[in-house]
Image (cartoon, rainbow, N blue to C red; front, top):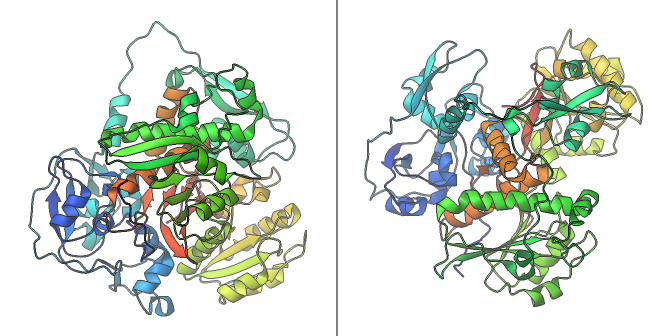
Length: 639
């Protein structure tokens, strides 16, 4: 087993923006990897990831990398930037940014100020310079109203630093509407262009058939989207009347089958593993020369009661939600492994049946049945108390235990990694985002999920209104707390439909005289009720935190297409999660320094992003998306 170092140290994460520090360029030679390049220039993998976030997924021949020539990696603050925005750009926890920059929390940002992004010293005495720039595959775009540097970078699958490099003067002068910009054509974009070519004539005629449902009482746009494995944006696109809200008994289109874009077998195929894969732990080595690292996928197939060779398994899968979730996660993991084979990582992967239930997991029997002595990383189990049981049993080994699905805090084991942000982290990230805006914040809570004391203790500048169940918010009290010159963020944390509807009506009235934005500390189901008009949420720019990215992207579209081609159905959230966690963990196992923590940089996959912090002796993902309802009836990520 090749040792993987996992020490809890300063967790500095890679990001998506431009660090204003002196850099040189390096053109990747054939066969070079990030570790070799870091050693060549006396720097670290993680600093290279900070300057070149696209390198997190590996580097390719002729790729141009920024190499630091100074010992400090810094960011110079420009007008209108916020602490939250900078932390998000680099996938650094806000608290970490405060730690690296004493006085920042107390004094706030100042234009022109330099912020430390890392406390790692870099010695570049042996650095060499390469002025070669890859000019291939460039295109030009015209800047439209409302666009930002960061937004353009994300849309074009590139980085802000690359845009600055390709457009001299952009950093100093900023964006202007109508301005032409050079942007690189990424591999994803090239693929997309090729796929948009007209298809050759076919003797097979495809008929576009709509799949519909009848809206049931208490159904919400969110619940319908989730139940039918589609996005809310798709529902709004297919059903234009939804902009006026849900109507009980109405017929909704929830998908299309047998169209030219999905000309595959659309029957639901169980993503069932082969029996030998989960009975003994099949070797799925990407490369195996005797020194491979070992990854175990500990998944609850429960093959003692689920005979995957029996045709009746199809009915079992339909009825067993937990098994369905397991197989979806497994299918996503297998696709991630297939996508990583081209990397030629020296990795040995085994799928092992955890025999897990929501009540228990017999770790002793599991360890007797399977030898984990050489295991570097375990992904699984699913339930947090079972993850804790495995961590306890392995506490004297160097094996890293990755919790892939649970949002429970669990116990803070030093080698247990929580990939799902828990509710406390989600709530804190939402509040930190609001505080960073330096505007007015008013919290309204019924105390069921968040107490009034939470706000007064942790955010003393936030005004709080406590209400009882079904109580209406007093217009006079709320108006007295608003600021006529600032944006007023109204944080609503209550579960009553009556209170919700009344508050929205009140905010619409107050919006005539005040800048108002509705916010929640989690996505509130009550605001998805048919009694709430989606246009009101759009008017109030309803903003909420999410552990998954519900917005659309080229990467998500490509993943869905690849998944559907193999499995004949759209990927569920669990399938996407299986892909994201597996891809991210394997990449970290091989793209990190031998002497560094493999979880000390940030990354973004199809629907999930990962940026880890050390909290109370445990390792937790604090990467949360802040989303909002936009005017075009879609959900977008807030900047």
